[in-house]
Amino acid sequence: MSRVVIIGGGPAGLACAIELRRQGVSEVVVLDREQQAGGIPRHCGHQGFGLRDLRRALSGPAYARRYVELADEAGVVVRPEAMVTGWSGEALEVTSPEGREALTASAIVLATGCRERPRAARLVPGSRPEGVFTTGLLQQLAQQELPIGRRALIVGAEHVSFSALLTLVHAGVDVVGMVTPYRRHQSLPFAGTAAALRYRTPLSTRTEVAAIHGRGRVEEVDLLELDTGRARQVACDTVVFTGDWIPDHELAVQGGIELDPGTRGPRIDAAHRTAHPGVFAAGNVVQGAEPADVAALAGKHTAAAVALWLRKGDWPARVHVSCLAPLTWISPNAVADDSPPVRRRMLLRAAAFLDRPRIEIRQDGRTLWSGTLRKVVPGRSASLPWEWTRAVDPKGGPIEVSAH
Image (tube, rainbow, N blue to C red; front, side):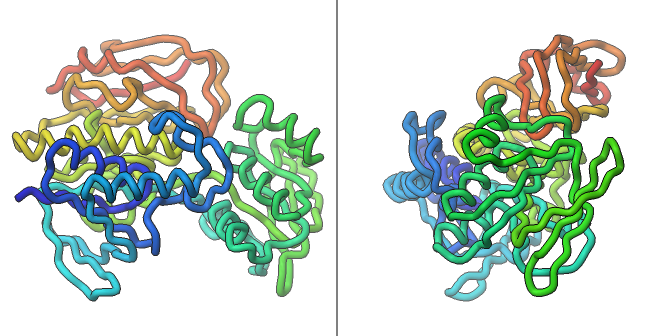
Protein backbone atom coordinates (compact mmCIF):
# COMPACT_ATOMS: atom_id res chain seq x y z
CA MET A 1 0.00 0.00 0.00
CA SER A 2 1.37 3.42 -1.00
CA ARG A 3 1.24 6.12 1.64
CA VAL A 4 1.95 9.75 0.87
CA VAL A 5 2.54 12.13 3.77
CA ILE A 6 2.01 15.82 3.14
CA ILE A 7 3.43 18.19 5.73
CA GLY A 8 1.34 21.32 5.85
CA GLY A 9 -2.43 21.70 5.64
CA GLY A 10 -2.66 24.97 3.72
CA PRO A 11 -3.98 25.37 0.15
CA ALA A 12 -0.96 23.68 -1.47
CA GLY A 13 -0.97 20.68 0.85
CA LEU A 14 -4.72 20.11 0.73
CA ALA A 15 -4.95 20.58 -3.05
CA CYS A 16 -2.11 18.09 -3.51
CA ALA A 17 -3.82 15.59 -1.20
CA ILE A 18 -7.17 15.87 -2.98
CA GLU A 19 -5.59 15.34 -6.39
CA LEU A 20 -3.59 12.34 -5.15
CA ARG A 21 -6.78 10.66 -4.00
CA ARG A 22 -8.37 11.41 -7.37
CA GLN A 23 -5.41 9.71 -9.01
CA GLY A 24 -5.98 6.57 -6.97
CA VAL A 25 -3.35 6.85 -4.22
CA SER A 26 -4.71 4.66 -1.45
CA GLU A 27 -3.52 6.53 1.65
CA VAL A 28 -2.87 10.26 1.82
CA VAL A 29 -2.11 11.83 5.21
CA VAL A 30 -1.89 15.58 5.78
CA LEU A 31 -0.08 16.72 8.94
CA ASP A 32 -0.78 20.26 10.15
CA ARG A 33 0.63 21.80 13.31
CA GLU A 34 -2.29 24.23 13.73
CA GLN A 35 -5.51 23.40 15.53
CA GLN A 36 -7.35 23.65 12.23
CA ALA A 37 -6.17 22.96 8.69
CA GLY A 38 -6.58 25.56 5.98
CA GLY A 39 -3.42 27.63 6.29
CA ILE A 40 -3.03 31.40 6.27
CA PRO A 41 -6.38 32.09 4.50
CA ARG A 42 -8.18 31.14 7.73
CA HIS A 43 -7.04 34.48 9.16
CA CYS A 44 -7.77 36.63 6.08
CA GLY A 45 -11.29 38.00 6.27
CA HIS A 46 -11.23 39.77 2.90
CA GLN A 47 -12.61 38.46 -0.40
CA GLY A 48 -10.66 37.39 -3.49
CA PHE A 49 -9.63 33.82 -2.71
CA GLY A 50 -10.29 30.91 -5.07
CA LEU A 51 -10.57 32.64 -8.42
CA ARG A 52 -7.85 30.64 -10.20
CA ASP A 53 -8.44 27.23 -8.63
CA LEU A 54 -12.06 27.00 -7.45
CA ARG A 55 -13.43 29.44 -10.07
CA ARG A 56 -15.30 31.45 -7.46
CA ALA A 57 -14.58 34.38 -5.17
CA LEU A 58 -14.50 33.49 -1.49
CA SER A 59 -13.32 35.05 1.74
CA GLY A 60 -10.18 33.58 3.26
CA PRO A 61 -11.98 31.57 5.97
CA ALA A 62 -14.58 30.26 3.49
CA TYR A 63 -11.81 29.29 1.08
CA ALA A 64 -9.95 27.38 3.80
CA ARG A 65 -13.13 25.62 4.93
CA ARG A 66 -13.92 24.58 1.36
CA TYR A 67 -10.54 22.90 0.93
CA VAL A 68 -10.92 21.05 4.22
CA GLU A 69 -14.38 19.88 3.08
CA LEU A 70 -13.04 18.73 -0.31
CA ALA A 71 -10.22 16.85 1.40
CA ASP A 72 -12.68 15.08 3.70
CA GLU A 73 -14.92 14.16 0.76
CA ALA A 74 -11.90 12.77 -1.12
CA GLY A 75 -10.91 10.50 1.77
CA VAL A 76 -7.79 12.38 2.82
CA VAL A 77 -6.68 11.84 6.42
CA VAL A 78 -6.16 15.35 7.81
CA ARG A 79 -4.44 15.43 11.19
CA PRO A 80 -4.39 18.85 12.88
CA GLU A 81 -2.12 19.55 15.85
CA ALA A 82 0.40 17.08 14.42
CA MET A 83 3.93 18.42 14.16
CA VAL A 84 6.92 16.75 12.56
CA THR A 85 9.60 17.06 15.24
CA GLY A 86 12.22 14.80 13.71
CA TRP A 87 13.25 13.40 10.35
CA SER A 88 15.77 10.58 10.07
CA GLY A 89 16.06 8.68 6.83
CA GLU A 90 12.57 7.96 5.50
CA ALA A 91 10.85 8.06 8.91
CA LEU A 92 9.11 11.17 10.23
CA GLU A 93 8.84 11.65 13.96
CA VAL A 94 5.37 13.11 14.60
CA THR A 95 4.23 14.65 17.87
CA SER A 96 0.50 15.16 18.43
CA PRO A 97 -2.00 15.11 21.32
CA GLU A 98 -1.96 11.31 20.94
CA GLY A 99 1.77 11.20 21.67
CA ARG A 100 4.84 10.53 19.53
CA GLU A 101 5.07 8.15 16.62
CA ALA A 102 7.29 7.29 13.67
CA LEU A 103 5.57 7.65 10.32
CA THR A 104 6.98 6.17 7.11
CA ALA A 105 5.87 7.03 3.60
CA SER A 106 6.45 6.10 -0.02
CA ALA A 107 6.58 9.82 -0.82
CA ILE A 108 6.74 13.03 1.22
CA VAL A 109 5.47 16.43 0.11
CA LEU A 110 6.74 19.51 1.93
CA ALA A 111 3.98 22.14 1.92
CA THR A 112 4.95 24.10 5.02
CA GLY A 113 4.37 27.53 3.46
CA CYS A 114 6.20 30.73 4.29
CA ARG A 115 6.20 33.52 6.84
CA GLU A 116 6.91 37.22 7.05
CA ARG A 117 10.19 38.27 8.56
CA PRO A 118 9.50 39.61 12.06
CA ARG A 119 11.29 42.57 13.57
CA ALA A 120 14.09 40.48 15.07
CA ALA A 121 15.02 38.98 11.70
CA ARG A 122 15.14 42.47 10.18
CA LEU A 123 17.60 43.61 12.88
CA VAL A 124 15.63 46.75 13.79
CA PRO A 125 17.24 48.29 16.92
CA GLY A 126 15.62 50.03 19.87
CA SER A 127 13.69 48.79 22.88
CA ARG A 128 11.44 45.72 22.96
CA PRO A 129 7.96 47.02 23.77
CA GLU A 130 4.60 45.39 23.08
CA GLY A 131 2.65 46.38 19.99
CA VAL A 132 4.99 45.03 17.27
CA PHE A 133 3.24 42.57 14.92
CA THR A 134 3.46 40.85 11.57
CA THR A 135 0.44 40.88 9.27
CA GLY A 136 -0.40 37.30 10.20
CA LEU A 137 -0.51 38.05 13.92
CA LEU A 138 -2.47 41.23 13.26
CA GLN A 139 -5.12 39.33 11.32
CA GLN A 140 -5.43 36.72 14.05
CA LEU A 141 -5.95 39.43 16.67
CA ALA A 142 -8.54 41.14 14.49
CA GLN A 143 -10.46 37.90 13.88
CA GLN A 144 -10.58 37.20 17.59
CA GLU A 145 -11.59 40.83 18.25
CA LEU A 146 -8.65 41.31 20.60
CA PRO A 147 -7.12 44.76 21.24
CA ILE A 148 -4.64 45.91 18.58
CA GLY A 149 -3.83 49.55 19.28
CA ARG A 150 -4.89 53.08 18.38
CA ARG A 151 -2.20 54.45 16.05
CA ALA A 152 -0.30 52.11 13.72
CA LEU A 153 2.65 52.38 11.35
CA ILE A 154 2.89 49.81 8.53
CA VAL A 155 6.38 48.74 7.43
CA GLY A 156 6.26 47.67 3.80
CA ALA A 157 4.24 48.49 0.69
CA GLU A 158 3.54 45.10 -0.91
CA HIS A 159 0.15 43.52 -1.61
CA VAL A 160 -0.01 42.20 1.93
CA SER A 161 0.82 45.66 3.33
CA PHE A 162 -2.41 47.03 1.90
CA SER A 163 -4.23 44.01 3.29
CA ALA A 164 -2.84 44.98 6.71
CA LEU A 165 -4.10 48.52 6.12
CA LEU A 166 -7.64 47.24 5.52
CA THR A 167 -7.47 45.04 8.61
CA LEU A 168 -6.34 47.97 10.78
CA VAL A 169 -8.97 50.33 9.40
CA HIS A 170 -11.77 47.81 9.93
CA ALA A 171 -10.54 47.31 13.50
CA GLY A 172 -10.84 51.04 14.16
CA VAL A 173 -7.09 51.71 14.26
CA ASP A 174 -5.74 54.99 12.87
CA VAL A 175 -2.94 54.23 10.37
CA VAL A 176 -0.40 57.06 10.58
CA GLY A 177 1.61 55.92 7.57
CA MET A 178 3.30 53.26 5.48
CA VAL A 179 7.06 53.17 4.80
CA THR A 180 9.09 51.38 2.13
CA PRO A 181 12.77 51.54 1.15
CA TYR A 182 11.78 51.41 -2.53
CA ARG A 183 11.01 54.41 -4.72
CA ARG A 184 7.36 53.41 -5.05
CA HIS A 185 4.98 50.85 -3.63
CA GLN A 186 5.01 47.26 -4.95
CA SER A 187 1.30 46.57 -5.21
CA LEU A 188 -1.16 47.25 -8.02
CA PRO A 189 -0.93 50.74 -9.55
CA PHE A 190 -4.07 52.11 -7.92
CA ALA A 191 -3.33 50.78 -4.41
CA GLY A 192 -1.24 53.73 -3.23
CA THR A 193 -3.72 56.29 -4.57
CA ALA A 194 -6.63 54.47 -2.96
CA ALA A 195 -4.83 54.33 0.38
CA ALA A 196 -4.09 58.06 0.24
CA LEU A 197 -7.54 59.17 -0.93
CA ARG A 198 -9.85 56.80 0.94
CA TYR A 199 -7.93 56.24 4.15
CA ARG A 200 -5.68 59.34 4.10
CA THR A 201 -2.67 57.12 4.73
CA PRO A 202 0.62 58.72 3.66
CA LEU A 203 3.19 56.50 1.94
CA SER A 204 6.83 57.37 2.66
CA THR A 205 9.09 55.95 -0.06
CA ARG A 206 12.87 55.53 0.23
CA THR A 207 12.36 55.37 4.00
CA GLU A 208 13.39 52.78 6.60
CA VAL A 209 12.60 52.16 10.25
CA ALA A 210 15.78 53.04 12.13
CA ALA A 211 14.58 52.19 15.66
CA ILE A 212 11.51 51.46 17.76
CA HIS A 213 11.09 53.03 21.21
CA GLY A 214 8.72 52.45 24.10
CA ARG A 215 8.59 51.24 27.67
CA GLY A 216 5.60 48.97 28.13
CA ARG A 217 4.17 49.72 24.69
CA VAL A 218 5.45 51.22 21.44
CA GLU A 219 5.56 55.02 21.80
CA GLU A 220 7.66 56.27 18.91
CA VAL A 221 9.45 55.09 15.76
CA ASP A 222 12.58 56.63 14.25
CA LEU A 223 12.44 56.84 10.46
CA LEU A 224 15.42 57.41 8.17
CA GLU A 225 15.02 59.01 4.73
CA LEU A 226 17.51 57.09 2.59
CA ASP A 227 18.14 59.75 -0.05
CA THR A 228 18.69 62.69 2.30
CA GLY A 229 19.85 60.97 5.50
CA ARG A 230 17.28 63.00 7.43
CA ALA A 231 15.82 61.35 10.55
CA ARG A 232 12.34 61.98 11.87
CA GLN A 233 10.08 60.53 14.53
CA VAL A 234 6.53 59.20 14.28
CA ALA A 235 4.35 58.77 17.34
CA CYS A 236 2.41 55.48 17.34
CA ASP A 237 1.58 52.57 19.63
CA THR A 238 1.58 49.79 16.99
CA VAL A 239 4.05 48.71 14.30
CA VAL A 240 3.12 46.10 11.69
CA PHE A 241 5.93 44.49 9.70
CA THR A 242 4.60 43.21 6.38
CA GLY A 243 5.97 41.17 3.49
CA ASP A 244 9.64 40.23 3.13
CA TRP A 245 8.63 36.58 2.95
CA ILE A 246 10.85 33.61 3.73
CA PRO A 247 9.88 29.95 3.20
CA ASP A 248 9.34 27.84 6.31
CA HIS A 249 12.30 25.65 5.39
CA GLU A 250 13.42 24.40 8.81
CA LEU A 251 12.06 20.90 8.23
CA ALA A 252 13.69 20.77 4.80
CA VAL A 253 17.02 21.65 6.41
CA GLN A 254 16.49 18.99 9.05
CA GLY A 255 15.81 16.43 6.33
CA GLY A 256 18.97 17.38 4.43
CA ILE A 257 17.04 18.79 1.46
CA GLU A 258 19.05 21.10 -0.79
CA LEU A 259 17.91 24.73 -0.67
CA ASP A 260 18.12 27.31 -3.43
CA PRO A 261 20.13 30.35 -2.25
CA GLY A 262 17.75 32.73 -4.02
CA THR A 263 14.34 31.50 -2.89
CA ARG A 264 15.72 30.01 0.36
CA GLY A 265 13.27 27.18 -0.18
CA PRO A 266 13.88 23.64 -1.50
CA ARG A 267 15.42 23.60 -4.97
CA ILE A 268 12.85 22.02 -7.28
CA ASP A 269 12.41 21.13 -10.93
CA ALA A 270 9.23 21.67 -12.96
CA ALA A 271 7.65 18.57 -11.39
CA HIS A 272 8.42 19.92 -7.90
CA ARG A 273 10.93 17.15 -7.21
CA THR A 274 13.66 18.04 -4.72
CA ALA A 275 17.17 16.61 -4.87
CA HIS A 276 16.09 13.78 -2.53
CA PRO A 277 14.26 10.91 -4.31
CA GLY A 278 10.69 10.62 -3.08
CA VAL A 279 10.58 14.11 -1.54
CA PHE A 280 8.62 16.88 -3.23
CA ALA A 281 7.89 20.50 -2.31
CA ALA A 282 4.83 22.55 -3.20
CA GLY A 283 3.41 26.00 -2.59
CA ASN A 284 5.07 28.83 -0.76
CA VAL A 285 7.73 26.72 0.93
CA VAL A 286 9.29 26.76 -2.54
CA GLN A 287 9.28 30.54 -2.78
CA GLY A 288 7.58 33.19 -0.72
CA ALA A 289 5.02 34.26 -1.48
CA GLU A 290 2.45 33.66 -4.17
CA PRO A 291 -1.33 34.01 -3.70
CA ALA A 292 -3.18 31.13 -2.05
CA ASP A 293 -4.87 29.93 -5.24
CA VAL A 294 -1.52 29.86 -7.07
CA ALA A 295 -0.12 27.76 -4.22
CA ALA A 296 -3.12 25.43 -4.51
CA LEU A 297 -2.54 24.99 -8.24
CA ALA A 298 1.09 24.18 -7.47
CA GLY A 299 -0.04 21.51 -5.02
CA LYS A 300 -2.35 19.96 -7.62
CA HIS A 301 0.47 20.06 -10.16
CA THR A 302 2.83 18.32 -7.72
CA ALA A 303 0.37 15.48 -7.20
CA ALA A 304 0.80 14.28 -10.78
CA ALA A 305 4.57 13.94 -10.27
CA VAL A 306 4.06 12.14 -6.95
CA ALA A 307 1.70 9.65 -8.59
CA LEU A 308 4.23 9.07 -11.39
CA TRP A 309 6.98 8.44 -8.81
CA LEU A 310 4.81 5.87 -7.05
CA ARG A 311 4.19 4.06 -10.34
CA LYS A 312 7.65 4.16 -11.90
CA GLY A 313 10.19 5.22 -9.28
CA ASP A 314 12.17 7.40 -11.71
CA TRP A 315 14.15 10.35 -10.36
CA PRO A 316 16.04 12.15 -13.16
CA ALA A 317 19.27 14.09 -12.84
CA ARG A 318 18.96 17.85 -13.05
CA VAL A 319 20.76 21.07 -13.91
CA HIS A 320 20.71 24.03 -11.52
CA VAL A 321 19.34 27.43 -12.53
CA SER A 322 20.53 30.59 -10.74
CA CYS A 323 20.09 34.35 -11.11
CA LEU A 324 22.57 37.21 -11.30
CA ALA A 325 21.88 40.50 -9.51
CA PRO A 326 19.65 42.47 -9.53
CA LEU A 327 17.56 39.35 -10.16
CA THR A 328 17.05 37.37 -6.95
CA TRP A 329 15.44 34.08 -7.95
CA ILE A 330 13.71 31.99 -10.57
CA SER A 331 11.27 29.16 -9.85
CA PRO A 332 11.52 26.32 -10.70
CA ASN A 333 15.27 26.55 -10.17
CA ALA A 334 16.33 23.21 -11.63
CA VAL A 335 15.75 21.55 -15.00
CA ALA A 336 15.34 17.77 -15.09
CA ASP A 337 13.33 17.24 -18.27
CA ASP A 338 11.24 19.22 -20.71
CA SER A 339 7.92 18.93 -18.86
CA PRO A 340 6.08 22.22 -18.24
CA PRO A 341 5.94 23.85 -14.80
CA VAL A 342 2.71 24.73 -13.02
CA ARG A 343 0.56 27.14 -15.07
CA ARG A 344 3.08 26.67 -17.91
CA ARG A 345 5.26 29.53 -16.77
CA MET A 346 8.36 30.20 -14.70
CA LEU A 347 8.45 32.88 -12.03
CA LEU A 348 11.14 35.54 -11.76
CA ARG A 349 11.87 38.05 -9.00
CA ALA A 350 14.23 41.02 -8.68
CA ALA A 351 15.53 43.16 -5.82
CA ALA A 352 14.88 46.41 -7.72
CA PHE A 353 12.31 47.95 -10.05
CA LEU A 354 13.30 47.03 -13.60
CA ASP A 355 11.60 48.77 -16.53
CA ARG A 356 11.68 46.80 -19.79
CA PRO A 357 14.65 44.63 -18.79
CA ARG A 358 16.12 42.26 -21.34
CA ILE A 359 16.38 38.80 -19.80
CA GLU A 360 18.98 36.31 -20.99
CA ILE A 361 19.13 32.63 -20.04
CA ARG A 362 22.46 30.96 -20.85
CA GLN A 363 24.20 27.63 -20.33
CA ASP A 364 27.92 27.16 -21.04
CA GLY A 365 28.02 30.37 -23.09
CA ARG A 366 25.01 29.33 -25.19
CA THR A 367 21.85 31.45 -25.15
CA LEU A 368 18.79 29.34 -24.41
CA TRP A 369 16.34 32.24 -24.42
CA SER A 370 16.29 36.02 -24.44
CA GLY A 371 13.45 38.48 -24.37
CA THR A 372 12.20 41.75 -22.94
CA LEU A 373 9.75 41.97 -20.05
CA ARG A 374 7.51 44.98 -19.56
CA LYS A 375 8.60 45.41 -15.95
CA VAL A 376 9.75 43.56 -12.86
CA VAL A 377 8.62 44.76 -9.43
CA PRO A 378 10.26 43.71 -6.13
CA GLY A 379 8.02 41.38 -4.16
CA ARG A 380 5.97 40.43 -7.23
CA SER A 381 6.66 37.64 -9.71
CA ALA A 382 7.14 38.23 -13.42
CA SER A 383 6.38 35.36 -15.79
CA LEU A 384 8.88 33.75 -18.13
CA PRO A 385 8.21 31.13 -20.83
CA TRP A 386 9.36 27.59 -20.04
CA GLU A 387 9.93 26.12 -23.51
CA TRP A 388 13.64 27.01 -23.43
CA THR A 389 14.15 24.11 -21.02
CA ARG A 390 13.94 21.81 -24.06
CA ALA A 391 17.28 23.19 -25.22
CA VAL A 392 19.10 22.51 -21.95
CA ASP A 393 22.04 20.12 -22.13
CA PRO A 394 21.39 17.65 -19.28
CA LYS A 395 25.12 16.98 -19.03
CA GLY A 396 26.12 20.65 -19.26
CA GLY A 397 26.94 23.21 -16.62
CA PRO A 398 24.60 25.33 -14.52
CA ILE A 399 22.19 27.79 -16.15
CA GLU A 400 22.38 31.53 -15.42
CA VAL A 401 19.60 34.10 -15.76
CA SER A 402 20.60 37.76 -16.10
CA ALA A 403 18.95 41.13 -16.73
CA HIS A 404 20.33 43.89 -18.94
